Image 1 (cartoon, rainbow, N blue to C red):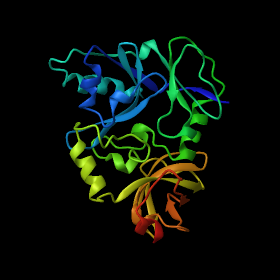
Image 2: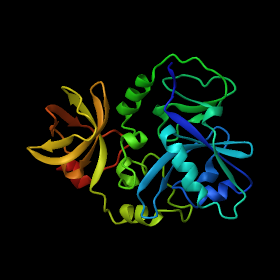
Image 3: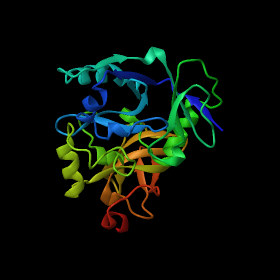
Length: 276
């Protein structure tokens, strides 16, 4: 029953009486849904609808805590602060106050933690923030392999700032977008991509035979580039692929390695692309 300390994660504190309404108009998901035992996965986008950062929102007393990629915490504090205006809200880097944990496979969150099930998939496990030292019985590599097997993207390792759109990373099926809450920054492109069927590429899990290709390696089909590698570990990886390259029995190559795409049960692809 593995529990991992995620040392590459940090925390942004959003406090004040206007905290929910403030974030609600900026991020992709329904902030009001965060509560005791319930986390929300959301993203901050550019005004043009391109991905900047994503995070898990946990609610505690009079504040919201964003479990985010540590390298993106300064960006989040800076970007969000631009929109504070007259809102009664404060933002700060609270990474020094918390350790971020993840557990799966039947593991139970340690007592005294602020925890919630991972909102993306039940199989993903849970997320937790803890102020004291906690012993871990699994490595970050173990957790990384766990999320790769599920086909879950991992922030900037799989998405490109100011280039990626949310639906490429599965934010629709994985519950990272609210289609009913109203306006937020970047909503127009996100909605247009969904309702007009404009998506041409997806981040797809791949099984890798041979040496793991580094992130950024072109993926080829019959010598023609059809995508690019993202994160990978121990024979499992993610690749950003053209939808017309994802078909049963297709084998792709990347830097001499053989890649076999597989579509997890949670992922919904257009029928023509899946049937080709």
